[in-house]
Length: 171
Image (cartoon, rainbow, N blue to C red):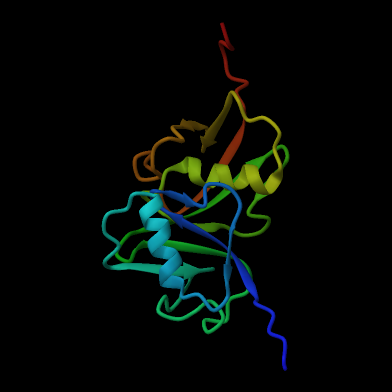
């Protein structure tokens, strides 16, 4: 009798409403349909309607009706799940601990909050403490709790993220 070993995929879903799971990746069997995990992510992130949304990996649209295995996905997988008519920005985070992503830019929806990419950068770069840090683009401090659109950012965005060394300091 042949022994069958189940294979798994480590998955994270990134949406404009947040990231699922909140930290790290979720381990799912590679024969599971992608759509099942996306529905679970939408429920957890309280996204009421995902009609018209698309799932992408590294800028490539994937077929969510297939299993991870049938879609050729293995290892660690980050799925960007977004409404297909939305605009996106390319973003890179620069810190004293390094740059995220390591090369190039992350393509994210323009109405995603800036803090989502900072959370990913923090996780990848293993930054110990970001309390009191600020995000600056083109010499202008931005509000990380707001979207790129609300911060008037578009196209390619380089975020300098680090301690606030501005005038005035802390009282």
